[in-house]
Length: 267
Image 1 (tube, rainbow, N blue to C red):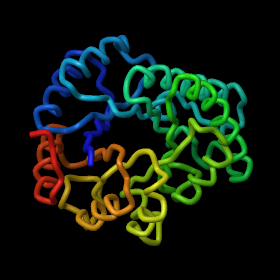
Image 2 (cartoon, one colour):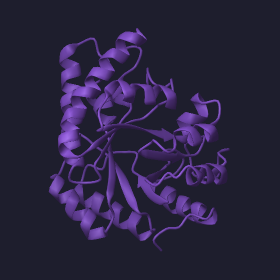
Image 3 (cartoon, rainbow, N blue to C red):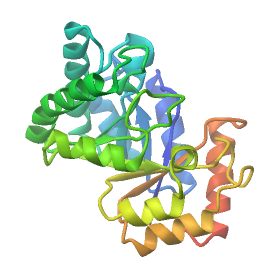
Image 4 (tube, helix red, strand yellow):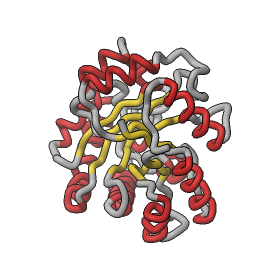
């Protein structure tokens, strides 16, 4: 099992990214996951150089910043907004082609306030994903749809809904992922969802039920990790902690916690 660390906030300065990647690598993580922004703030070649310097793959790029900060979403009734959202995902795919070849699409689906009608929204989302996937496929990149809970995204909250959307997209460059905090809210069973979808997913976020440091909520980590192993999942598992700790504290405590649960790190 390959464990990466998810930087939940953007890293605007290259010197900070250098320091963060050094710290994550020193803790023995197998990779790092970063938030993509427009513009990035530094050349993608510089990110590639840091990845090589620290022997730390950038396993994926998160695209949600462009919804929160630019208002770009695939379900918008405004065709120009949808076109810009597709363009931005394509831009992130071009960056990912130099890195871990994965772009995560979750928030960029939009909210019900963007489009109240679910059928209309999903038609637009499917069309936008098909367009973005054409560019991603040419680059050898996979767009990974994240099923996000109903409080944060308007559509495709469950693994089954994400899988159906991927089928509508009909591209080898489209896949989907799971995130334990969203599964805990939306699914009848976290473990059965992993068993049912684990062989087909392309990425995974491991997050405590309260979003905080591991062990402070009620996620059954042993059972989750066992289910991933049993279903043959062999891609990255990203540690996701976004509350009650600095990234240093979160990365350090998660590594110690997971080692106690039999997960191997690089040191």
